[in-house]
Image 1: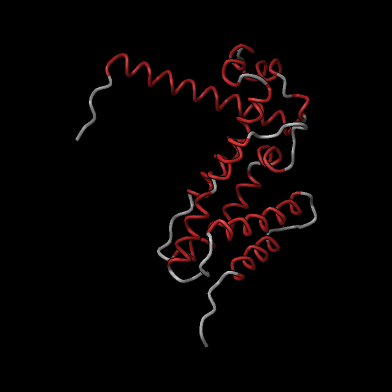
Image 2 (image 1 turned 45 degrees about the horizontal axis):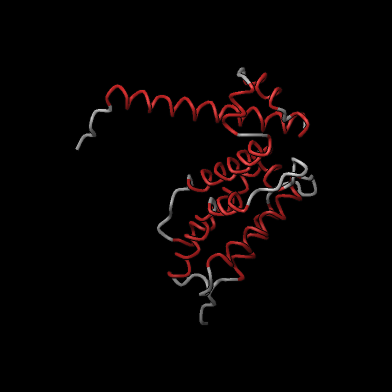
Length: 208
């Protein structure tokens, strides 16, 4: 079946939403680039507006205030990480899919340094995500829970709450990535070792 024609009003509304989303994405890109290059003091509505070529009114209308902008950046970062993980092609074997998600998460962290610093390193002093934002942020990584649940169902991992394994894996990954970003680790070998070790801790022991 083909969808019904949008009509003039529908087409206008759709175009308006697309323009709004494009502008919002551009403003977030400008803000996170300023954060990374010039630090948190650069995140003023006037500076962002000047860099983006719009008025401060547009930014206030879209985000409310500086706190709203920071929370939007926080959520955008997790959304980008979700897209990295969702882009990993599913495997027929859920265990192989789980091990493939690990390097994809590291790639997301290293490819989005501005967002990473905001999400995990308190790059904006005083910013505290709301409980709603924290819930949405963790939900963005639910693919880990789903694939781990598939591994449990298939008998690869011990029966337990998938979130328990996901959080242990996430914690190990974050520790290695933080050390790598700080220059204490030169490559991803330690990251691979610690994430594989966590997965192995929950593997079902096969009878000899």
